[in-house]
View 1: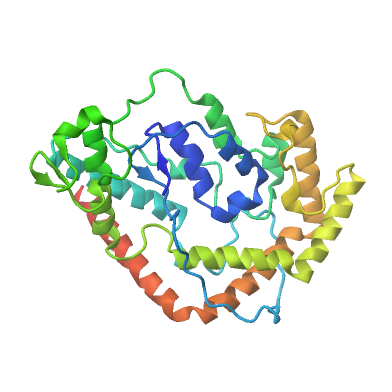
View 2: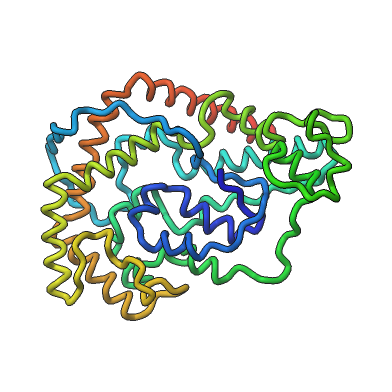
Length: 350
């Protein structure tokens, strides 16, 4: 699990990255953003859908049988594309609602222990990545490219990191608060241990819930289900992406795109190589040089219909894997529906 500082700007930077495991992998600028991330402190926010430990691998169709692509669209950009796995994932709006509901429940729980805790506001709706497919296939929006280059707009994590104030940062929670908040996961300063009985998991005589108030809030929201995007759904999304990279149809359109870029003076074998870790394209703001290259990149994608081909190929792989995991995904859909109902009831009460 990844614990984040209470500072909203730093939180937004990492949530933008964590919202989409694959979007981060395929977007070189996000790699740079991770390396430039501000130091993190122990706090209450754990990135939704990022779980350490064993993974739940989907049952897969034989890799020797690439699926047929019956039709290929020609999208203007990738922003509003919807992958077949998305019904088994939370929408970005629902993730925002989930985090807001969690914060409300944590505040109530902390109040019961005598702490006036205020949960950070959810910044999931104002992150740089505008949708799950926005940068999945590299930059594909001509207007964004002409204005921001490869950057993610006003909410780009790198720009946010540059804007994080050095003074007036939120104070680190006390050891007692951290224990009640998270259930004792993390180091506690010796000077505060006198107030806390770790062996009995109590604070001032009151039993601390498993996982602290954060664990209780999540259990109340999802029960035994997944908090945030289910692991199986995320893994299907990751596996389909990996397979699409190795598909002959995708590789062919990559070559055509590469030739188009080479004609403009840029040498990249595949869309995910651009812009890479080149320091010229990884500052807080886009340079003119970066904008020119990003515009050419989008132009070559449109000329070759790279996004349409790649999306269609990946969607075919997803459908193939989904069919093999239908029973588990039906259960995931039910758990997701139950959680959204709980969130709606909580919102109505408040």
